[in-house]
Length: 282
Image 1 (tube, rainbow, N blue to C red):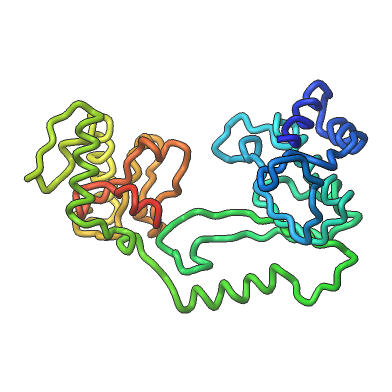
Image 2: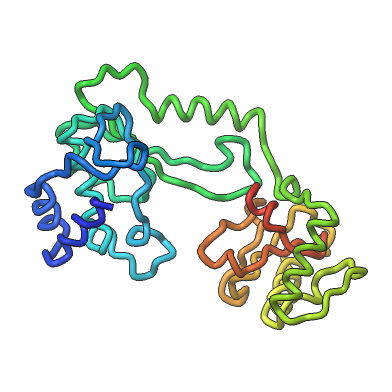
């Protein structure tokens, strides 16, 4: 929380570089409230810092993203200064932050390794959720291996042994499916039909039109009934007239985004959507 307090104080200053200078000139908080000991404790030394800073200003889905000049920009300067002052040997940051800016904050003391991570690196080829991890290592440390080369070696081995398809995430039993259907009917003020195989009757007008449009696009492109493809998944949270969010081309479940909480992932072959537990696995 103190990191956010420092960051908010910097918002009156214009520009990231000025914000960073203000952060670097500010005193560090050496002690803080400790829940473990029910009192105030000194911030302990760590050998490895693992952080996931806010990504709202760096996210691709934010059309107004401002990167380091956004409201969360000063947090990166606070994070970098903590590494420098406490001499933390190694850190891993999960965020799509500009490497040039990060190099300016830490490049004199740390080696910086951007690591592009994909779900199929651990065998989940049927899902799509790419991430950027940035590994920073003190130049005073003895480095035995390049972390990027080491990761790629392990990932290549994993991909050669394990590989999923979208249908591998479709495993819900009848009870779970009916529970999902009942809850959707309740929320949408519809009548639940326990004997109905297809859950299409629970889709709203926009979703039904999206399914029809995507079915039409699929048949036109692949000359096949979409209900015969067990690996086909439609994301109904997007407008198909604008973009087709489906697994038809890359054979991956469409990426879970901020609107996936209300948008359903429709399975033409099963005539239902992915359940909550299936989405957790996908």
